Image (cartoon, rainbow, N blue to C red; front, side, top):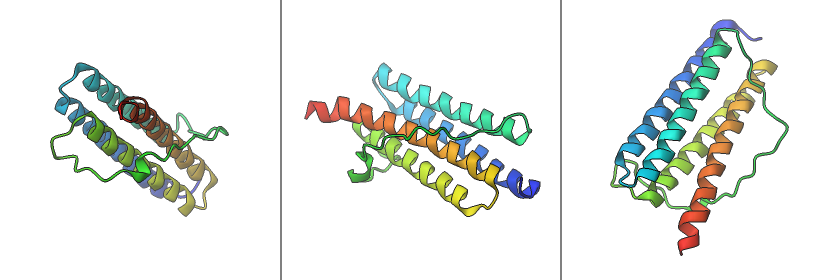
Length: 152
């Protein structure tokens, strides 16, 4: 593995990012007025804490994340939607848009980190994290397709 200090620095960054994602989804949950919407975002907040815990275990040398060979489908729905300010009043549609775009950003960031390292283990770790974010984006896109687009 590459220089342990550099790897720890990268892991600390990812751990902090996952905590911020948790906080973001909890904040979205608080803004939702329908109980089902609150539950969905609270669930995603919990998943982000799960990612954080995985990263902490990796940092402690207890576990190494590896990507699966399964390709995660990308519906690209979020790619073509107008950006939404997460600080404004959010209905379910806008909240899904913000979530899709945030997951896409995380996916891209983790892929970029993976591409920037020459260390195979670090690369595999961040490719695995990118896949996790791609799964989240897909789940939001499916929800958007089934709930928002189906209504129109």
